[in-house]
Image (cartoon, rainbow over all chains, first blue to last red; front, side):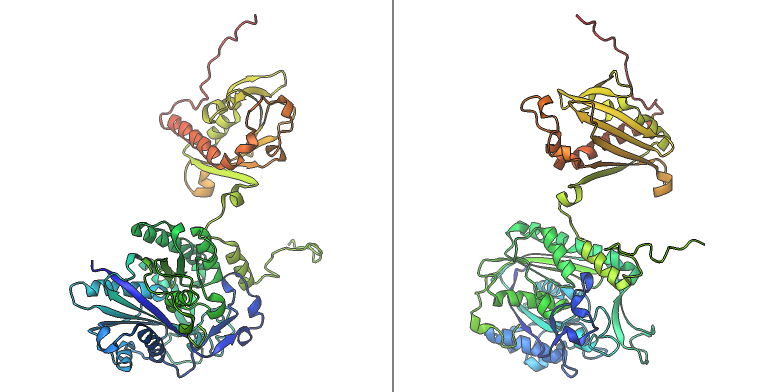
Length: 344
Length: 218
C-alpha cells in the first residue's frame, strides 16, 4: 500500500460563542451524560458548510504553502447537517478554493470518525492513480442549525453539541507516516440514531415541530457500553498494528460526545495525565470535526512536536463505525503567531 | 391495598427514589456512575464475590458443598480435615502447615452453605465464606446451578488477632486478599469440574473419602 501521511490540520470556529444561559434553566448543573460544556460555538443562520470549509482550508493551505489548484487531487467532505438536499458541498468547496480535484467524495457516513475514514479512502484512491494530495473536510453544524431552534434548545441534549470545521491534508509519501489505521463497521447499530420531529413526523414532511436528533431510548445503556469498550479496543488494535505500546502515546485525540466517554476511555487506556487532549468544555461535542480540531488545538498548545506518537480514535453515531489510527508526527511545532485569531 | 406512610421516610437523607429523581436526573446519575473499566481494588477491595454455573442439580450441589470434607477436594489447600472435641468443628491444615478450623452452617431450604473458618485457633471463626446455591432454571432458564460465593474483608484480614499462635515467617492470610478473586475463581472452577465430571458419568458425587486408621499414640 502506498504510504500516506497527514501533513497538517486546521480549524475554523464560528464567531458566536454561546454560554449555558441560552439553554434550559439548570443546564450548567447537569451531570453524567448531560454534563454541559461551559461554552460552545453555533453557526449563524446563513453560514454554510462551504464557508466554514473554505476558511479552515485557506488557513491550512497558507500555513503549508499549498498550491490549491495543483495540490488537491482528492476532496472529501462530511457535513453533519448538509447545506442542500440531493447533493453534498464538495464541488462548491472546490469552486470556492479554486481546486481541481480528480475525485470529490461527499461522505454522509462515519460521522465522528470521518477524518480517519477519509484517510483510509484517500490511501486506497491514491494507489496506482497518480493522485497525491487529499483535502479532508469535516463540518459539524448541528449546534446552530438544530440545537439552537426554539423547542429544541431547552432539551437536555441541546447544550452538548458545538459547531466547528476541522480540515486535514494528506499526501502520498512518508512525511508524518500513518503507522496504522483500523476501522470497524457495525451495521447492526445503524438504526439506533434518528432525526425526528417531536410529533413523530419525518424530517422531510411539513409540520410545526422542530427536528431533533435522538437515540432510541431503550438502547441508551447498550450504546454507552458499546462506546465505552469500542474506542479503547480500537486504540489498542491500532497501537498493536503500529508496533507501539499504548503507554508510549504522546497524544490521543478522540471525538468528544460527553465527559463520561472521555473519562471512561482515559481510564480504560490508563494514559498518563494530559495525553488525552480534548476541547469539550470550550467547544462541546464537535462530532466529526472533533478529531481534527482537537489535533489542531493540541498542535497550537505545543502538546506535540516532531517525532511525537499520536493516536486518533473514536466512534460514530450509536456505534455503527469506529476507527483508530496511529501516526508519528513529523511536522514542525507551531509557533505562537500561528495560533488562530478566533481562539481555537 | 397497602401504601407507604406519608412521613415514613422523612429525615432520611440521600435516598434516590423516582419521586425526587425523574428519568433525566436518574440518567445523569447512572451514566456518571457507569465506567468502562474499574480498578481491581474498587471492585474487590471490601467484598469479593465470585460466581459460576455448574451443570449439576442444585440439591446435589448443596449436598456436596454442605459436606465439609468436600473442601479437601475442591479447594486449593484445605486438607486433612478431622473432627475436634467440639461438635461440628473440624480441624485441618491450610497453606501447608497452618492449622485451619472450620465449621459448616448450611440451610437446605434456603440453599445456603457458609464456611466459618479461622487459622491457628477455633474459638473465633471470623473467615466466613458465604455461598448461595441458586437453581439455574429460575435465574438463567437453564438446567443446573448458579453458585454465588462472597467474602467480606473482616478487619482481621488486615491484622492477625492472635500473632502469638503464628509460626515465624509465615505470611498472613489477609496479605493475599488482592489475590482472593483469582484464587476463589480457580477453586470455584475446581468445584464445577468435579461436579460436572461426576454428573456427566453418573458417578456418586462424593466427596470420595477413605476411612484410615489413626496411628496409635506412642
